[in-house]
Length: 130
Image 1 (cartoon, rainbow, N blue to C red):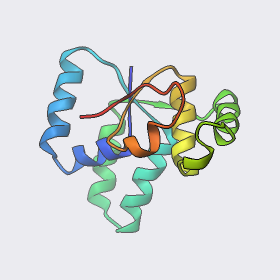
Image 2: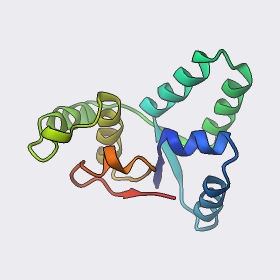
Image 3: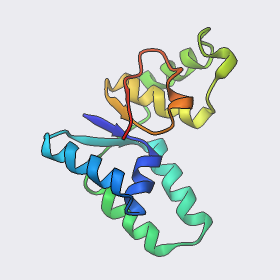
Image 4: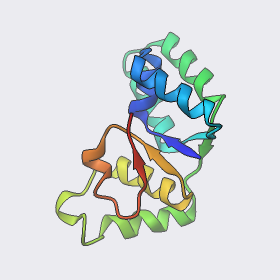
């Protein structure tokens, strides 16, 4: 399963050609798609910032098609571990990105993002871009 970051989902909403091509590839290769509940919160935060009801409707349509990974006690423990991990202390991503990474890691998913600067420092996180 491939876990989709907010930047990918936003690019889909904006009809970005590269994101659409990647989505076509993922579906053609029968990849199951998911995202995290934290990513969902980021999407709705952005849509509500601009009071964009059309965008909110589009987000709901996309989310109806993919699995939403929850924040569990296992991912909460992983978050605490990552927050103080020696390899990322000096270049730690923000809390939201660490929450997303902890959910993705505990679910054993590949993470699809263009934000490699934040996520490439996370140990054992399998990342992919488009």
